[in-house]
Length: 148
Length: 106
Length: 256
Image (tube, rainbow over all chains, first blue to last red):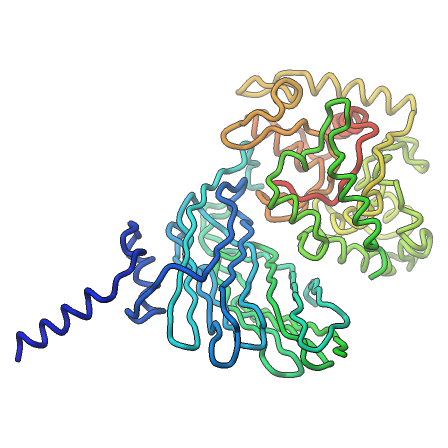
């Protein structure tokens, strides 16, 4: 009995392949992603994360995330979650969508404290999780004023 | 009254997917920055942003300290009926801002 | 919304912005930014500076001071009366007979005409009005007026510009005349033309004046910044505007 349930557990683990897991991610980033997926499979694809690869200032980085989805009642994106790797905390934003949007697209401006990976996770009405990630290099202003 | 700049079309065809943009003035203080006295400036951010179309929610966003100051958001919506698109921002220190625009759908 | 440009003007500015390489080799800092930031500046519905412009338009129409007057009471429609004005400052103020920059001019109106207290330097209200007025010069050519006092100020400004200062022993010219388009610690050095002021600087996460930016540079060079009221800033502003004569204004700009 014990052996069978051990094997069942082992099979479940191996089925959950995530090309994503092959990238080195700090633990907190992996943990918050798992909070969203609940351990369900996370696949790369369908999500386009548009951030400039090199930004002049980390205070306002333009970001657009799109998900390839028909946005019908049967098949639509329910939520988009954006996470970061090296800011003081791992969240960027969560957005909740529905067929009322017509397109799964959110654009905003974010803060990045350092060069790092940004991850987008999309949750669909079918219970699927899709993701994309971008590595962003953040440069800073050369002349910084004193905080007066 | 909060300084808000919203951009949504005034008219649309039924079924058309329109782009809605909202910009609001807010310091979005992260709570991680030290001030001139060396002490951390307390967090002061907008946490929740939502939009409704004739009262039905069409978009909701939870913002974190990682959202840039003077937050800008753009999203899409299907134009189904004429009426009012309403926006609401709320956050730390009791921050609350609301704005409405009218849209005619033919 | 009144005071905000029509699509035709926006298009003109965009093409004007594209043409911001003068042919004489001068180019606006706009050209040194990434396409993403250029897009942020070009889109009036997304440019954070437009929040300040909107606040400025409200202030323009608000009565203030013991005289109970608004800017509009004397100047009417800013899109008409303020067209090209920011492109001509610093200029000599009629009331004092002395040169002032745009912020100084706004405060002269506040104190002398509206009988209201002057707005504090870099305050939200002063920046909002300055942004609203500067917007009315977008697409206009920088055209500093000719005047003996201004000429003297420009000469002084040119001297400061070329003078080495601070711990790093650098002059403005060392970077902005000798090494533009090269990198300084990952940031592209612009030629330093004041075509976009007041700017929404991402580093500040706020709108700021040319004076703030100059002060920022001086501190960045590890030199001692002159006090806020010092004429050095006015001298530099006057010199920089003369150096940029004929360039297209792209205010209010976004800069990294």
